[in-house]
Length: 233
Image (cartoon, helix red, strand yellow):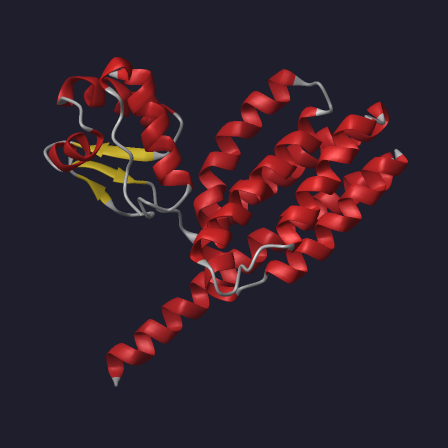
């Protein structure tokens, strides 16, 4: 997967920022990867000026780190930091989910069921494109559910937290293939939301996020142990 060249008419720092953010979220740029400005600008088909203007925004959101004389690196979180991010995400999302359930939005419920059905139809274990589509639909699912709460300030903070978490979610599911378990949890969220069951949706949302965070940390630690064992052989 490569970056898409930005049309000449869209040569603006905002367009560059959006492309880079999407690349980080979708795993085109992995945690810990160094971003060489010359290479990135070439892929995007832009000069380094718009790129230099876009990078500080990504750094302000905690997605990259700028180091003097060494360029920029995609943020790589330690297991304790990942758990902190997911604890914060669980707090924000459970609060939003509770407020969303109170709205009883039938249009949102219908769309959530459509998304869940589309996700079930994807061949995530054999098709990389279907897997990427699954990730995109999963992001849209949570976005629709939580936006139903109508709390824009909560959502604005959550967007930053989700951006830090998303690359790890995609990495973990790609490594473990835990798509079926995630689907079961999603169906429970839809049912609670449709019923307007605030307490249940709040509880399920918190548990869903916490389990995801724990799976990610367990996967990272397991892979580290396996890499260490392979290096010793």
